[in-house]
Image (cartoon, rainbow over all chains, first blue to last red; front, side):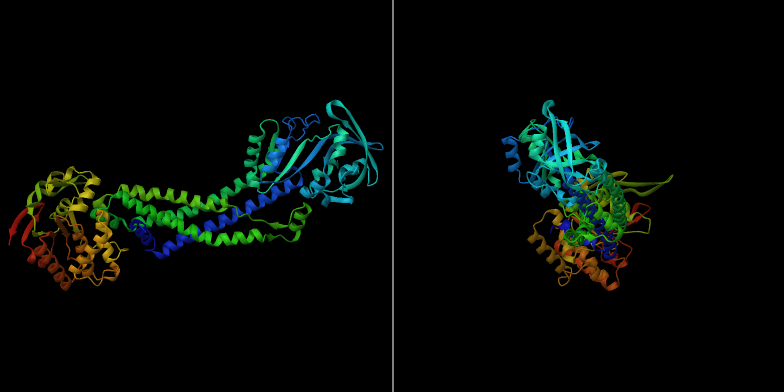
Length: 406
Length: 227
């Protein structure tokens, strides 16, 4: 330990009680803020998991013009470079193909416009657990020539399991698309908007229906860490160039993204107040410390200590105070957060029912991502740097005679 | 050899609208190995004069040369370094660094001078032994008596091998036994090692030991007696 550091360390423990109070304020600030950030990030992560797992996936690959103008003409056939890029990226855990367009669905005298989504029943079920939402009838089997319908659409059309629907649409480049699809099952989703969306058929039947054999409107990608989504997108873009459009979940679902951002902003204010209090705690200690030691500082300069060295010692003292508080905060928050990551806090009663109704697990989730902790360290460091301006100015402007007579 | 040369030293304090002439034209020469006491009633300018000699305050007029260096032309940073290498200080209230042990307090000055660790440890031990504290090297100031703290302060003042030691009322807070003991140590260091000591004091025991007594009144030297 250098002499400066040793002096700083001993100085902060000269008034143990005051130091402990300051450290305690930092400790509780770090603990509360870490707990809050971890819970927020865990909730966001779960929310995103639910949103992307439900339908959109984390990333989608499209024909470059598909998203702006969703017609069956903007389909694509996955080429070798796309397949290689997906295979070579270890962060991509799985992907499914979809063929999606608009159709008119008719039964007896009722006709409704709805989305028709061609899926690989097995792969889709693995990704989005679609079969979980079958309320009546059965889920699609591979190569199935039937359709499963969202519950409100089925009600509006007046169809039930076993009935046959007539589907009419526009196929590739204006070709007429028309076929009969027996209803295999009725889907009831927790999100009301999904219940009027449309129906799902086997992807090969969809390709035949729209006259686009071997083509898709989207590849839906799942990744192992939602924090890497942008990184994966950029890597895919770099590898594939402009031949495909790569979109992330938040670009496709800006509502959820905006909701998370709004919630984050609210939390920033709470954490801002918390850290302002912590900052004033440290500042108060530094002000008292400076006032008590003015004469001593004068003596040090009198016997030959440069003011720059004195201010360096005070810098160590200020940052050590913060560091000890952060360390104490981490010592408690790290095991606590890790425990909560593996043991989410269960939600009970009416709230639990509401969660389950939406297909969400009724629990409060936590995240132990590195930035949950690193951010606290950075904030405390910035606070101590800001507080340090006071002793720095005081030291550099120290009037020797006044200090010696104080 | 002259250690200090002071010519026409004046210090005027502007307190509100009243000018206070703290030092009123002092001329003085102090030679190597002197054991000098500066005496005078309160307000006579003793402390102001000592502050000027120590480079802690700047004169309004006049010159102070220490070892041939005109100190009022040094920058703030150069002056701090000059004090570190040329002047030893002993304060009335000891003013040791409370978080450092006796040996660390003595060693600290040499550390600032860039002396190697083994060398400064050895010298710090020797100095503390010289002032009779060889067995208290690892004690913090709070565990030492006033007399012992002042002896550590003397050791600290000597650690940098200064041209002279300035002691501002060094015995003011000590009992008679500690005063006697401290004066004996300083006198011995003065005689054996030819170290120059300059005291400001009200204490007759210090005056009795001094070989030169300079009396100030109203910022002027009114007597300068060599014994």
